[in-house]
Length: 564
Image (tube, rainbow, N blue to C red; front, side, top):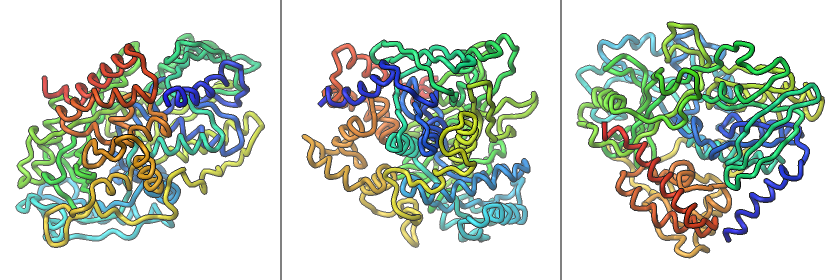
């Protein structure tokens, strides 16, 4: 079986070895990069997308898992950004149904908050108006009693009332993977664990030197154009390039991005139950924060920190940021102040994650939360660079860039409107879906509804593919045995065979939610997971040891704050 899995990758690598002709090389396998590959393939161009790690291995698996217009951006008068994001949200609810789902958000107004009830409702109505004609219903003003039912244990003494509205949520890793799989089905070639060593643009076209990190082989590729979609690594990627005008350093180029770190904590759903999501202002510093319901968990986020780790002088940003003890305490304190009855402490934190936002560089003095979430797209000869933007707007950004590239090359479907507007992602359900039952509380109580945890998890993990995965698991040795109550061992095989999971970290943290469990539980799974994946991928003893080390290190990063 391992030879079969590796043979499929080898066939894709052979295209590089034999100098296959590609119209466009896309460097970066986050949601933006795979979205661009899908757009180009849908336009009829031959696209190759590469990433030196896993698909969505950095920013695109470390978001707040929201698909939204960005209510708080109204305060910064970014009306165009909000409108575009709301329209993209509606398209995703149709074309990625199951991987993206509607969610009700509640915004409590507390005594002393900088946003009063009247201003909140005005903002919610403006938010809805900007989403027209694709608004998700009308906002509702809520009494204190009504919000108390939806946020059990909220600080009733400070609660004045508030409002509710509908937005959307997603599993960012699974959404990125669905886009990548759709891109491949549409004609793109997708290769992870391949890095760009250098890119030299010439009048006759770019020459890219690539390195296969699994085999050590190196290749030279001559596409018609190259797209740099490196997210927080945009400046590091551009530093690898020699433009027709020379290297960026020679031109004294200013930085494209100033990444900020966003950290999240995961706590048991029973400890902090909510009927829907909650958007609130932190009692600690007044920042806008979220409580996001998840099967078996509640996610609390996020921080927004501009620090040296995210913005080192003279080097690339650290792609594996970690949540600090101070951030974890801040998130706990903010949630506990909103819901004091939860008695939430750091002892309740199951896991954490942190990611870098690829924000565009801003003038000095602008704080992280004040910086624009707009994207920037520029052309330098045959090289195109994209940076900034929001997860929600990935398709729109890819559409703009795809139009530019197809027009510049004079090939494919070059209209501004991309075929991806009507393209349903592989595995998506047909049509829009209702808000999931698992995000609701049992009527008349503060308890989470009693539902089949496996079915609940699979709804967002596989969407329309759930029946195929179950049948596959039943066909595998021990495939129906549980890893945890939301995951079967057969899913490991599925991820390796059909989802390009090449390492244990890929599976634990991006193909499943197993890695969100308690540290000791996740750590004790490593030997069995290494054995199963090792057999499927033909790992040598040395490769198995490396994978065990990488998984152990990643688990440690999620819990590093405990050692501070």
